[in-house]
Length: 348
Image (cartoon, rainbow, N blue to C red):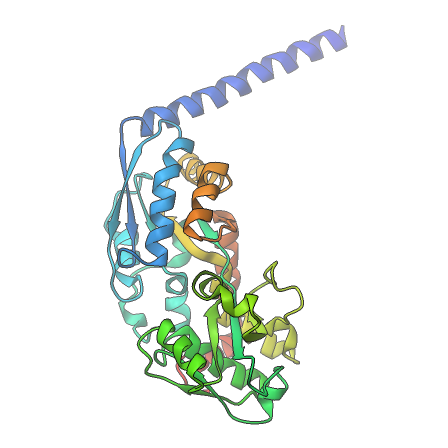
C-alpha cells in the first residue's frame, strides 16, 4: 500500500512538473512569437564586433522559442560606452533589446581604461550578461630574424615594438609586461592600423608587436606562422590557446602572487571576447531563455560552419560565467585595482 501511494504521489508530481515546464515554454513562445528583437552593436559596421553580432542575429532566432526576428543597429561611440549606457538606461527590460559590446567596457567603472570613467552610467554587475562568442588570446610577436627569442631576452635590451596609440592593447600590453616582468619593450606609437604595424615589422623598422590578437594574425598573416617568419614568445589570456600549447602564459611567467593578481585583473576581459548583454531587471525565465538559446546558437553546426567561412573563432562563454568573472574582478583588493589602473593609464 505504501509503495502504491508513493507511485501515485510521484505520478502527480511528474504531471505538475511537466505541466509547469510546458506552460513556461508556451509562455516564452507566446512572448517572442511575432516580435522583432533589436541587437545594438557598440562598434562601427564592418568590424570584428559587428561581424560576430550579425552572425548571431542570423542564427539566434532559430533557438529562441517563438523565433522572433532580429535587427542589428550599430551604435558606435567611446569604445562601446554609448551602447552600454543605452542598454542600461534607455531600453525596455523585457528581453527584446540586447547589445554586443567591446570587452573592456565592462571594466571601465573599475579601471578607468579609457580615462572617461565619469561617462559610464551603468553598473556592470546589475546588467544581464547573456554570453560571449569567443575567448581572446593576445600574443607577443617578434620577427624571426630578431635576436629576441624568449621573454628573458627581452629583459636584456631595448626592443622596439609598434602600436597605434597609448590606449591600444598593443601599447598597454607591452607596458604591463615591462612593469610585471622587467622587459624592455620600447613602444613606438603612431601607426595607423595593425596592418601598418605588420608592414613595419616586415620592413625591419620594428622588431615586433605586443598584445595583438592571435586570431588577427591567423586571419590576416597566416603565412607568418606557416613559414615561421615570426616567433611568439608569450600569450596573454586566462588559459592557453589550443594552437599554442608550448607558448608560456604571461600569468605563469610572473614570479609573485601580487603580479599574478595584477595580470589577471588587467586582462580579465580576454576571457569574455565579444560579449552580449541585456538590461538589468529581466524576468528570470526570460534571462534563461536568452542564455540557453545563445549557447545553443553558438554551439550549432550551422553557425559554426558559417563562422569558419568568415574566419571567426568560436569559443563561447555562458552569461552566468561572465557575471561571476565580473563579480570577482570588482571584489579585487584596492591596492591591486590601483596598481592596474595606473599601469593602464601609463603611470607604471
